[in-house]
Length: 457
Figure 1 (cartoon, rainbow, N blue to C red):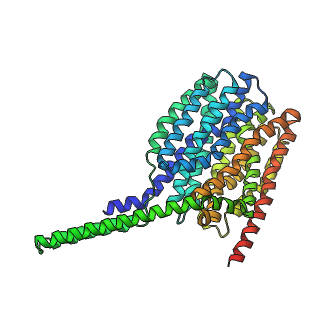
Figure 2: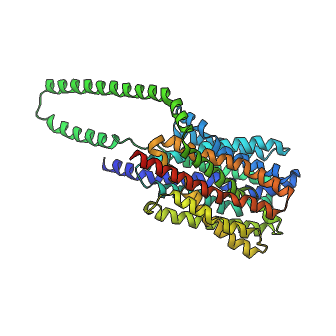
Figure 3: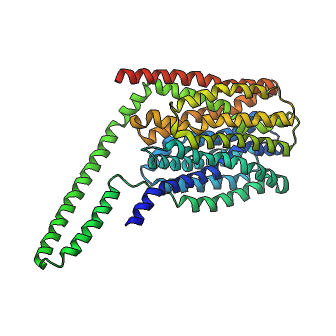
């Protein structure tokens, strides 16, 4: 019994590490699409906007599919949804390696892998939020999100080596097989958190068993039989009451779902939150989709591009580790971390437009990665802090994933079209202004939330 209780208390960190591994396996290749981008553009001779939108579509659906994922979770367990998503993601990678034209990749990589990524990432992170609903979610989510940065850091040289030696098609086949085997084994570790009544119930059952064993020596057979009947009747009554409660809750949820949606649509702070997230990812997605192409335009060769991407991932890794260490002890709201890093991001992003040497690119990439950690590392914690009590875990995930999805969706074609029409410097400056604009909207959202809190008090 003591061992079981210890496992229940510590299993949440197993869930954290399992989520870390899933983010490592899924977002590692997706965040290095800019490396695959060069190979696709060379083979299919496509424009920057058309090629970039392939990665943008996949990354966008990894967020925009969240409302459908929530509906699936009402029918299946989160572990089942996660594993289904992992199968779809790997199938998409594998099928992409056989496409004869870039248009087919929009279905295999853009849609199939993107939807699979959402099922995996949404369900696993929502499950993590449920395990840490009472506290420490900032630390847990930062550790889990370290998986995406670690994956970006690890898959950058791996993908470069595989493409250089075996071609991009064989590289995708190798990745799909390896991710599937490791990911399925990791996904099996995911479990739902115990309810608040589970641990006391187990303890009471254990104590009742010891007491009954002691009393069995001193009571008659008819007494034991009567007691057994009474317990059975009590258990039946409890079961009937629980079933009635569940039935009433389901009826209540179904009846008030649309009322809740209409109330959210009229909420100004939710609109401000959504617009700010949209602008944030509109700017930062450049590093996932067009960054390698931008550096190739600066005459950096493939190994140097890989090193710069690794430097960017290293800066982001350090930032997220710092958040994991001190995130639960900040004297202010997590929203202010997102705001400050978005404002400061304008400096290295503008400097990137005038950097021409490999050393300068490395330095600016480290600073940019560190600042992006502030936006990416605490975004889910900020959403949970602001909206968890009001809307619940599923809605928090949708609010934090869907608006960025729209930013990701148009980031690559927008910057790619700008790149085709104008120079790479003006294209980068255009995208770099988005995070600072997002910071202003985040500030308005924060002011609106404070005003609403003051009125409610």
